[in-house]
Length: 314
Image 1 (tube, rainbow, N blue to C red):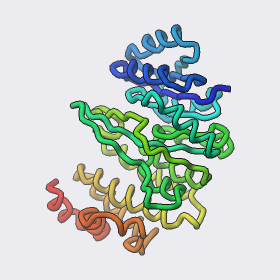
Image 2: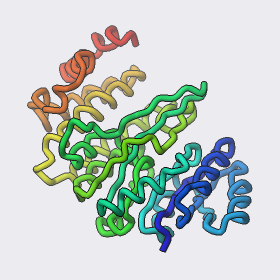
Image 3: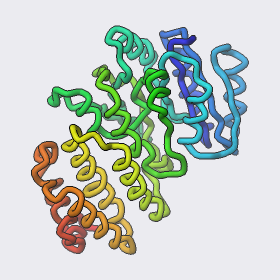
C-alpha cells in the first residue's frame, strides 16, 4: 500500500499539466502513487500523461467520459490504494516537500485530515499566501468547518473517507461547499501545517473565476439543501449559522448582484436566512467581520438591493 495517492482530474489543462505532474513526481516522499484521471479532455493532455506513465511506474493513467471535476475525483477515489489521499488540480502544483510534511504530521498525530496553507499565484506572477485556519479558534474541528471550503490543500485518510461513505456531488456548482462542513463534523482528528505547500493557480478561465451563465449560481440552493440534510449535529449550530451568513447571505448574494435579472434570488436568500437563522447578527464568528462586510449583509437581509449596488458601484 502506498503512503499517499495523488488524484489529479484532467480537463483542458495541457498548458499547465507538466508543471503539475513534475511537482507530483518530484516529491521527497517516494512511496506514492499518482492517478491521472483524464475526464474526456479534448486537448493533448493525454499525450503528456502518457510520457509520465512511461517514465514513472507510480504514475497511472485513466481515461473516462467527461463527467466534471467531482466525477473525476470520485473515479480517482475508487481506484486509490494509498493510506492517505490528496487531490491536486491539473493546473496547480505542490511544494516538493508537501506530501512528506503532511504525511509525517498525519502519522505522528493519527490524523484523519491534515490541512496546509495555499499560495495563490496570479497570471502576472504575483502571489499571496492564504492562511487556511484561524488559529484564534481553539477547536480545530470548528475552525476547519468555517474555513474556505476546498479539498486540494488537504490530505485525507482514505479509510476515513471510505467509512463515512464520502463522495463528491456530481454536476453541482459549489460542490466542495456541499460536503465540506459535513466531512468536518465527522472527525476531530484534524491537524494543521502552517506552510504554503499547495500552489493554486488563479486564472481567468478557472471554474470559480469565470461564471458566464448566472443560472449555474442557483446551484447554491441545492447545495444548502444538501448541507441541511447532512448537518444535523446541534453542537455545530454556531458554525452552520456562520456558513449560511458567509456563503449564502454574503458571498452568493454578491455573485447574483452581477446579474440584474437575478435580484429575485437575492430576495430568496434574505428570506431563507430570515426563516432559518433569525438571530444571525449575534453569531460569534460574524461579530469578528469588518464593518463593510456587516453593512453588505445587512443591506441584503433588508432587501435594499439598490442601496447595495450604489455602495459597491455596480
